[in-house]
Length: 138
Image (tube, rainbow, N blue to C red; front, side):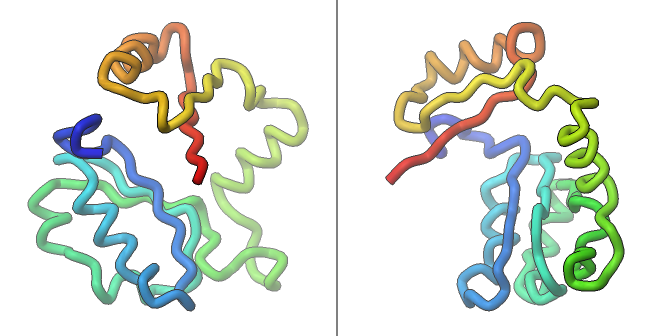
């Protein structure tokens, strides 16, 4: 990652299963991997346990932003809680065809990315490519 993004990622997405001990450090790992003034986006977590080991000072010094996916913090409606916020509204709009999720989407394989290809992708944003998806395989 350091070769492709020596300053760190612009955005790091974090999904935490709190019953896995290592996962409690994911938010801190994401903060360390994210550039100055970058954004951390929590896509899923069930309680506040991930904040217990969060490197708050580093996060503050790097002027990072923390975002979530609506109001789904252990309150998913299938668990008897509230319906999600922005995330659910976006998914509903996509399902109803109000948003074309495939338009402008380009998929790239992680093992094919090198500095030249990454530069091509970044230069194509946002005119030729609107969304870039990187696939990983083992």
